Length: 372
Image 1: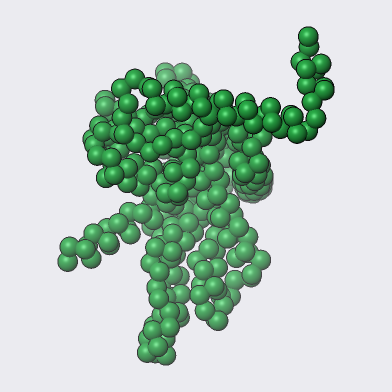
Image 2 (image 1 turned 135 degrees about the vertical axis):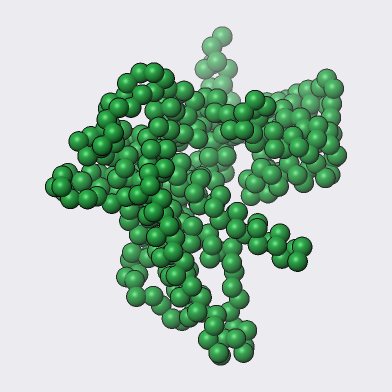
């Protein structure tokens, strides 16, 4: 008897009852396997299909806060379930080992292949999420060549000073006026300012184009507005917010089962929204790369070019590059980078240069104030 004949006679109520029975059987089997597992350890109760992902999301996908909180609750030996992984931590130091899992190297190991990261277009590209060793070496060589250039370092110093002076001007206009000080009208949120400061610096150094998230935050804090056109400020805000949403959504594509992302309503909506946001970002960055290529092609060879990272990786292994010899694993690599490779090098720069740089000074200031 075919499955069609079995289900064709079922009404909607019978069909829903059948699905409900299947779910009850699955959940019962799931928790039976969980409670009868070998060598059980304490830990948060996992959910069917998603494991401990809901608890992980409560901590705003902060890995260190998530594992640190459960280490305090359950002690030095506990287990959590993320995706198909059963992670057992025996000491607080294991949290660092989870983030830096190699015992023979101080550098992070490359992630294995993940279908979710492939779906969102990040797997096997750039540096952070690249599991292809040859591609990773090729990209790393261009990346290090660009950021270790003396001219790039000088440009970074100049841009950082310029952006800090701009931020200082905003602070003077918002917080240091006499009437503001008397009424204690505005409170300086240092973390929010520093986050936008690092965003503007990194975007400018990476793309060679200004970002105006500090200006947008200034416009939101008081009645006074900046002289920058509102459309440019809003475009910068949208770009940076899309970047943050994109990086946050990677957690879901890493740990949530594809079936859940594609068919379960809440997760499907989040997944579709993340894919739309990724397409917007890819198109935006691709347009920046295309525009810069056209600018370089229209610039005479005897005229200097900007010293941002995008210009450096575009001109590498072209007549504009003074160093023609490139090797990867002993093999000569004389071709320039493609737009796709450049795009994901830029994404790695954004994620490594904004949140990390923002967290370091905030942490230093917090520790200084704490122990003074």
